[in-house]
Image (cartoon, rainbow, N blue to C red):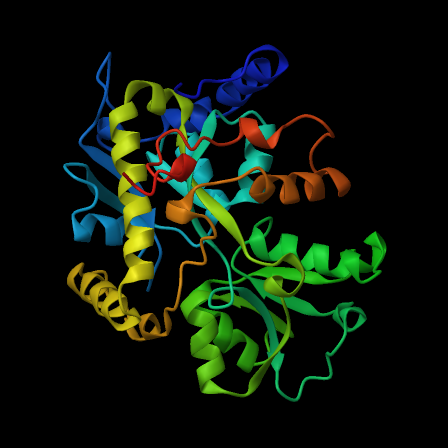
Length: 350
C-alpha cells in the first residue's frame, strides 16, 4: 500500500506544516518544479536532487551504473546538511532528500508529509563517525569536552545526536552538555579546522575521516560504533504526495539504490573508487577527487538498504528524552516503508 499522510491529529499537524511552508514552496522557480508528475501519472522521468561537494552519492553512482532504468537525475546544487536536504524535499524544492534518521523523525513529528523509502548510509567497522582530537590534545575523557568547541557537518544531525548520547551515557548532566559548543563546519574543511586549532574536536566520517587518519597527527576520542554498534543511520525520503503520484518512479529509484548498495559490497573496493572518481571528474563541478580513494563502505546494515524500527526508535527515544519531540507522538513504523525495496522480506533483490 502506498504511504499516505496519517489521519487524526497527525494529519492536522501535517496540514499546519504545509501551511507554514507555503511561502517557501511558492518561492521555488517554476522550472525547478517541472520534475513532478501531474494528474494521474504513475511516474516522472526526472528526479531533482542536491549533491555533496567532493563526494559521489549513491543515487549518482546508481544512475551511472544504469541501475535507475529510465529515471534520470537532475542536480540543482549542493548541500552540506542532511536536515536541509530533507527539508528541501518536504517543501518540494527537490524530489528526494537524504538525512540522518533522527532528523527525519524530528521533521515528521513537526508534520512534514514525507516517508523514508531506503537506508543509504550507516555505521560499521569500515564506515563510522569518529570524534577526533589532535594527537597531543589534553582531551581524553567525556568531561574534558566541557567548554570545548566540537565541529560537525550540521547541527541537529547525526553527529550532534551521537555526541549528546555519548555524554549522557557517561554521566554528564544537561547543564554540562550545554557547555559543549557544537559548531557547523563543512566536511571538506573539517580536518583543516581541527589542525589549525579552530576546533578542539572534529566529528568526521566517511572518506574525510580516513583521509585525516592517513595524514596522521590525530587520534580518536570516541566513535558511534563503540556504543551503538552497527546500524543504518540515514534514509532517503520522498513527499507522500509525490509517492502517491509517482509510485513507479519511487520503486525504480529505491530498487536502483538497493542494487547499487549490493553492487558496492560485491565489487572490489578499487573498482568502486575508480567508478566514483570517474563520475566526479566528468561532471565538471570544480571538485577535488583525492578524498574518494579513502572510501570503504556505505555502512548500510540491512541488505539493499532495508530499514527496521530500531533505526528510527533509537533517535525517537533520544529526542523524547531531551524534550525535542513529545512522547508518544510518533511511532517508528509510521516513518518509513520497505514496500518499494526488492530486498524486503528476504527477497534478495528479485
